[in-house]
Length: 302
Ligand code: FAD
Image (cartoon, rainbow, N blue to C red; front, side, top):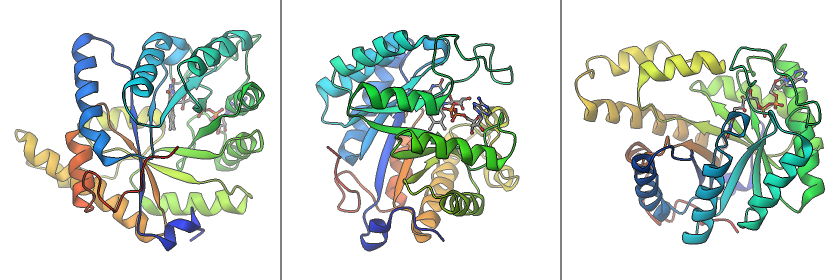
């Protein structure tokens, strides 16, 4: 298999990052900060905070990122989309993020304003797509820039080749890491990674791992994202309907098995979609022998 990160094969250390979303209510804020407190001791490589479609969560994302940078030692990335905004508006947002200390962006086009499945129209004076946004960010400062990648292709992509071509454009524009959409079939990821490497793309392609909080909701969400959910998951979760603890055990087993298998294939870096909840993330990591401040996790990045 093409190596994702050669250094990872020389070291048993795994790099883990966590993704959060900005809370929409005081209760959700409490949950997020409890989650951050619980996960901080795991010394993630970085954490990231999503940015809502059409800039709807510009303020909450800014506030969340600002608090993470100001009150924790976590290296924090801000997601940023260019949907529905002019270039000047995006630059203004970038300046605001810069002012609170952001040095790492996850640069995305964003979903169409009409919703997933509708046609994407770039803002007339805006960045056309994520590659264009990455180029714009490069001109605005010395940032670390992560982008998205889609092992099962983005639903709007004509085919896999077009999808990988877009990733290449993002890398050529200055992206230094790609975080993938969640997937569950590691063979699919391995084939994708081989095609990415064959296209001359050498940046780390970091698997996005989604511990399954709720299988029914996940299936609905996955069908919109173009991600597939293996049929045998129904069997694995079978009989756990009234038992949250049993469901959590199965979910942690699945996520830990997936990470362990990928690590065995030479992958050393993982991005966990926490859904702002700590328990599944912690039980997944503990199954891998990764505890708080465990020597198996590499320390927070600068
Ligand atoms: P791009 O990489 O620009 O494009 C995705 C694909 O669509 C390309 O591979 C390409 O084949 C096709 N495409 C795009 N433009 C064109 C074109 N002009 N011509 C032909 N084909 C084209 N969304 C949010 O709103 N906020 C977030 O914080 C957020 N975080 C995310 C984090 C990760 C790790 C991932 C994987 C996704 C995230 N998303 C987020 C979802 C993302 O915004 C959507 O998937 C969106 O539809 C595409 O954005 P992108 O940056 O991946 O697009």
